Structure formats: structure tokens, C-alpha cells
Amino acid sequence: MQDPIVLQNLTKDYGKGFRAVDDLNLVVRKNSFVGFLGPNGAGKTTTIKMLTNLLTVTSGKAFLNGVDVSADAKRALGGVGAVVETPEFYPFLTPNETLQYLGALRGMSKEDVKRRSKAVLETVKMTEWANVRVGKFSKGMKQRIALAQALLHEPTIIILDEPTSGLDPRGMVEVRDVLKELKKQQYTVFMSSHLLNEVQEVCTDVAMIDHGKLLAYDSVSALLSRIDTKKLEVHIANAVVPEAMDKLRSFEGVRLLTIVDERQFFVDFAGSEEMQAELLLKIQGLGNKVVSFKESGVALENLYMSLIKGSG
Amino acid sequence: MAITSTRQLPSDMAQILTVARYDLFKHLRSRRLIAIFVIEVVILALMLALPAILNQPYPDDPAEFVQNLLQFTFTNILIILGATLFAGDAICSEFQNRTGYLVFPNPVKKSSIYLGKFASTALIVFLIVSVWYWAAILIGAGMTGGVSVLAIQSYGLAVLYALAASSVGFLISTILKGSTGALVLTFFLLFMIFPMVDLVGTLGGVEPIPSITYQSGAIDAILTEPYPESFVEYANESIGLPFNIYFFYPSVVSCVGVMLGYVAVCNIIGIILFKRREMVG
Image (tube, rainbow over all chains, first blue to last red; front, side, top):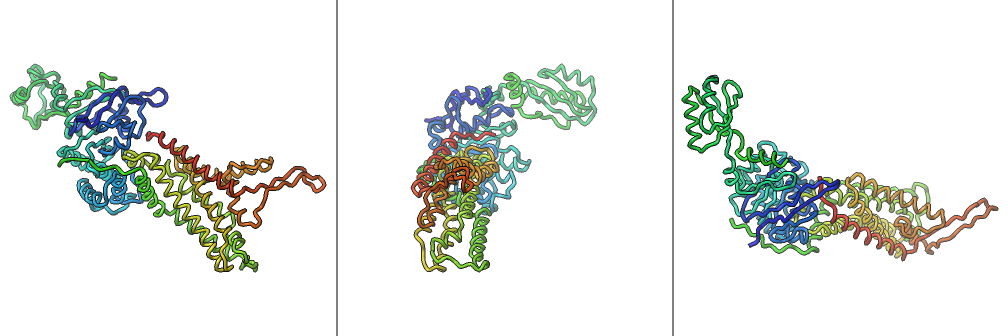
């Protein structure tokens, strides 16, 4: 069985000696949902552009369903649906006409396009705009149509480049709902993002990249297990008592205690869930009226930040 | 749901036709095409009314009638406008307007996209030239009672010139980054730069055979009977002519050859450059 996406020593040099992607090796297994994480300028979009034949490869190879993209882009992209950057649409076409156009290019019959257009426009909640010219659509609406066209031909591989980028909060939630829906189905999805919560929420695997090099690639659960310290955010109804805080610092698992204001503090904590439950009881035992006790930020964040710092 | 993608990809030719069909939508729904048709109607109406206003008789000969009605200057401007508006930004707009991000990641060769777009442009400039010529030929038939073969031959050469000029536009649009620059360069190249080179060559006694704007002169020359031949008025101080003056007329054969050459060369280079062009930024 072919792995859907294989990158072998993939390298991309731009002019003036700038290497955007550096000897990248990656194998995406079938039916996985891979988050491709990295800071701005890490090489995520360049990698995706090489995968989708928008950029030429300097050296190395990119395979889609076993076909080398550089050697036979038409065949390699046959089973792929992609949303790269934020694509623009032909303003003189409606979403239905756009889907008919792209469907015809992908070898779909008129009936097939009609059936699938209805389904994918429903998925991205754009049915009522199906016959309105795209010219006046907002960025969020265009992004949803972009997702619809990527799903139109029931591809085996979906490649998404920061699909929620530039969207308002409502648009982000809606696109994320579509992504969660994809996760339930048997697609292989390769999605670049710099939004850690998004990746942690929808992805099964995560590849982290910086300066064009792969830093880590594993399942989300395996990566999370590497994280030994979590940041706990504690809100209390009473004022912080310094003596109580001193006692808290000596509790098992507490690495660092940071007082934000008189009713809020952070605890950097390493330990099991049971120890974490014990910690809450101890905080309450010190006379604190706990309003909330929760993990701050995203669990992947610490690992991500440490890897990024290490690569710099 | 089981995800399967077992569809057979269409042939390159089928994809060229698909691209052409949807690109044609763009042209047919654009104001550019309407504007060109309005210009054609206005010029034809003015040129038809002019002899009546000036109390001049209309020519009896169908070829002469068409020649007087169309005037090569207007035919030339219309063709250049058509090539500029429908070819000048055909390729670079895909990059500048970011529509390339939608189309290029599909299983379709860039050469198919290029050829599909060129086919739709060719059809549009053919339509522009056809409306222009057939309106004149039919009006001429009504006024003179006949249709000239020369007018139809001139129409054929005008179509060929429109295709060659569009090929130049396509080449420019694969080279330049921005639509505005490509449109301006296409227009001025065909309207001013090539004709200036033609003029310099002619003044120096060199027939500018490789120039499409020079060769486009055959569109008008073919309507004249007999077909004009190149000649020289030699320097003759007694009549105040200190240098030779050259009058060159392109032959129909050289016109067809050069136009076809431009179509082939510009599009081959255009396809190569388009295939190598990357979607950066």
C-alpha cells in the first residue's frame, strides 16, 4: 500500500541563497489528519506549494499517492483536493459554475458535479449563495467555497494551507467544524497551521517545522506525553495570602508559582492527574476559595516553544 | 464514508476545451467586449454617414467600398485593442489576482491552461474582426450589389493579424508580473514601438519584413487593384529630394508567413515561460 504523501529530502532554495525548505523527510500515513506546525516563515507554505506543483522543487522528491509531483503533476494531483493560501475566485462565475469548471477539469460528469456540488455546498453552509457571482463574497465565504472545491471530487488526499487564516472568529469556528467533519471521514488530511489549539483539536498527528527543517513528527498523544510540565491557572475569590503561597511552592510537583494579581496565580506543575487533583485540595486547604482551576493555554504550546527555541 | 477517487482524468484536449469554455464566459460577461462592439458600431455609423454629409458619392466597387468604410487605421486600432484587452493580461492576471491558487493545484497541465485561454481569446478576437468586416461587407453588398473576394481575403488576413497580435499579448502576459504593465506594454508595442521600428527601417531602405505591424499592411493593400508594389523615389536635387524615399508593401505570402510565425514562436515561448513560472507570494 502506498503512503498518500511522501517527502524525500525535499529542498527549496529561493534566490540570494535563502533555503526555505531544507532536506525535509516526511511520510503521511493513510487516513491520518496531520497538522503541519511552524512559525511564520518556517517553510510550511513552501512545502505545500511544492506538493501542489505551485513551486518547482530544488532537490528531493514529493510523492502523492506514489506519483512524483515533479515528474507527472497531472497524475499526482488527480486524487488531491487543495486549498493553498487564500485563493481568489473568478468574480464572473457563481460557486456552482466554479464547481462545474473544476469538476470538469477533474473528469467529473455533469450529474456527478451537480450531486457533489449540492453536498459540499451544504457542508460549508453556502447553499443559499450557490448561484450568486463570487465577486462580492467576503473572505470567509470565499474560504468556504475553497474548501468546497477541495472536497468536490472526493479526493483521497486533502491539503490545506492555514484554512482559518484571515477569518473572523465566527468564520474560524465554521471552518473548524468542517475540519472536524473531515476527521470523521476517511480522508488523509495534511494541514498547515500556526494555531496550536486548532491542531490539537482536530489533528491525529503533528509535524513541527522551523527554518525548513523537521523538528518533530508524531501522533498528538505521543507528543503530549513528552510534555512533563503544564501551566495551571488559578482564580480565587479571596486575596492571595503570601504565606499560603510560600507553602504552595513546597508542594510536590510544583515547579514555579507566578502571582498575577491578588486573585489570580499560575502554577507550573509536573505530575499525574491524581497529583493535580491533590494539588487543588491543598490549595483549598490553605484557605483559598477557588473559583476556577484549569490548564492555561494549549498543551502543545510548551513543546512547540521549546522545539522552536532549540532550532533557532 | 469510504473515500474513493477512481475517476479517469480527462485528456489534455478535453481540458483545453474546458478552460477555453470557462474563459470565454469571462470575456462574454466582461464590459471590455461590449465596449469594443460599441466602438465598432459608432465608427461604422460615422464612416457610413460621412460621404452623405460631405455630398460625396459612395464607391461602386465592393472592395473599394469596404476599404473606404473600414479604413485600415480603424481596423488596426480595433485589432490592437482586442489583443490588448483579451490577451495582454490573460496569464499574469492568474498570478496577480491569485486565481492561480484555485486552478493550478488541479490535475491539469499548465500548457493546457495556456492553450485553453489562448483558444478563448482567439475566438473573441475572431468575433471582433468578423463583426467589423461582415458588417462592412454586408452593407457594401446592399449599396453596391456585390461582394468582393478581395474584401474576404482582407478579412482573412485581419483575422490572422488579430491572432498574431494576441500571441504577442500572451507572450508579454507570461513575462510581466502585473496586469496594468502587460496591458500597457502590449498596446504600445503594437501601436507605437513596432510601427516606429518599421518607419526607421523604411527610412533606411530596409524592408521591415519580420515586423507584424509592417506585414499587417497587406490587410489594406489587398483591397487595392492592382496589388501595390514596393518602389523607390531616388534622390534628385533638381526636385528637392536629397535622399531616397522607399515605399514598401508586404506581399500576401510574407504577411501570412510572418503572422503564422508570430503565432507559433510567441506561443511556444509563452508556454515554456508559463510552465517555469512559480506561484510565489
